[in-house]
Length: 472
Image (tube, rainbow, N blue to C red; front, side, top):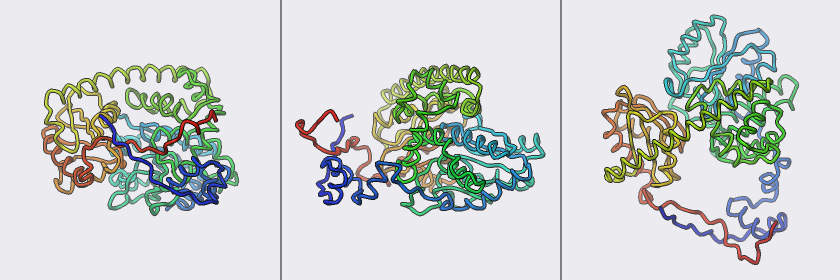
């Protein structure tokens, strides 16, 4: 599909900005991003000049710290409940390593993507509570903000829940002991764009501060960088700062698992950049959650055993190869459906389904189809009469808000749903897919208006005369 060029708007950078950066092109680019004050520009370009926000800015952070420290001091058994994507894997590994370092008794659990899906599931939670009567504290990461039933179940069994998450807030928060979520902050706050691993990192920062070891959290920055890039977090405020510092930590990481993973992927750690995470390390870790058991990723990211790390890294490579093959097959099948029924492209959203599609990779294929057709895409697998799948969106369309509208207009149509602005998951009765397709298209068209299904835009940052281009 051809792209609409969006020409750069004329700007006149202030003289103070032009003098600070001493480069007219850079001054114009920064001004177009709303950065005109020299102090803010220095913090944007150099993490050493940035002043990070205190962890205490996050709602419920102080009571979360108090509860975790009490669990450590009393020797209470704790459980970290994570999620199977890279953000969830890194957040889980970060919290497990943190709690062990503080002397806590901790175990962890990440649900299976294929059989359980996202979230804190009451059936599995009840089984874990039955298996360990000593469990007294559950800490979630990258999940939990809508887990009302699970939190109520835990509380009924005398177990407190501390939530760390970054997903959109439900109408009412669960009755957890604490709910640490950057979405509870006002728009524009520097912590607002933190992903799940970012929220977990700020908890680590606060705990180490209270433990009298304020600089210790820095050894977790490599995990934070992995999760930030893999979750495609908006790089603003503290999220950008954590990634800048985290990339340096990654290049010098001593984690046996990350070193083994880089070796298997053919990446030079000392020259690692965000593209290497996004297209090298991230997909391999994600493949484990899609094709295998993401709990192995926590072991990979926390083990000191180099031989075990290499075994796990090679297993990830195998899963990644399988993921590539499955992705290509589903992509081809999806395109064949569209060719067979052109009316599928009549709506503002594209919804496709098949009973044999692997639920672990439909999100990847949905993302490719978004690029092909420039509209939100939902891919569903329909085994056992229930359609489960993933959505990916386009700029200007909050796909989770669209699902909220679908549920408001068609109560009960969706069995479950949740996600971010640009990505979401859902389940519904397979027989109701046509109804869902129409309802979602109406919701998407309501958001995009005349922009629905236009050619994708390519934003031009600047036109640079060839004579001004130097090797630097």
